Image (cartoon, rainbow, N blue to C red; front, side, top):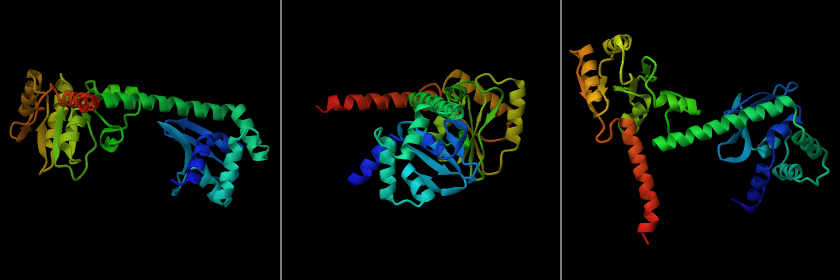
Length: 296
């Protein structure tokens, strides 16, 4: 990165992009962890503003044009036709309290006294980000990387409540999304076990069914229906725990479709696949912490 780019990035981080756009006529309609939606009622321009989990500069994205995105400097260049040099000067003015530039004065007034709608949208986005940070930390403790999680398959896990649901028995029967290229139907106790199995064996070619530790008669009826509809060429895998209850669950599912060939695949260690993933994560962290001391 060139020194000029480093300077620009530093000043961009200090600019509150929602407040800047507000003084330009944009209005906030909603805020969440995914960002703040702002629209200009005069021009019809619509943008999504976002600040990442680890802070940094605000960025914008145009929902109608995937190529129209970037920093406040990019916004000025595209919307105003300003050069990069002129945009940098304007951003520096916005970041400098002593600046008497009219645009900078209007911006600082908005920052100091934000309109209620804007303040509410920013608060909602901050609250959503904090919840997402907490969820990401819990996922890391479980051995799951939020960055590599297949959200299409397993759903978004961006709140503590969503994470709590994957480590609890599902209410009824939980089934992940199915891709036409899937070649396995994997049964587990909890959703976290399905995620753990996918990380080790799934290869994005498996659909998952979580049934809980004590499935009732209604759930078993649904499981029997699922087993009757298994496509040709798809292997049924019973990835229940390595304990007595896991073996009992495997026998109960086999009894629902005795003519269907099923593969039993418990974890090599740990009670269930989710436990195995967590144990491996803890071991890797311990090795990482011990590494520097062992190398001395």
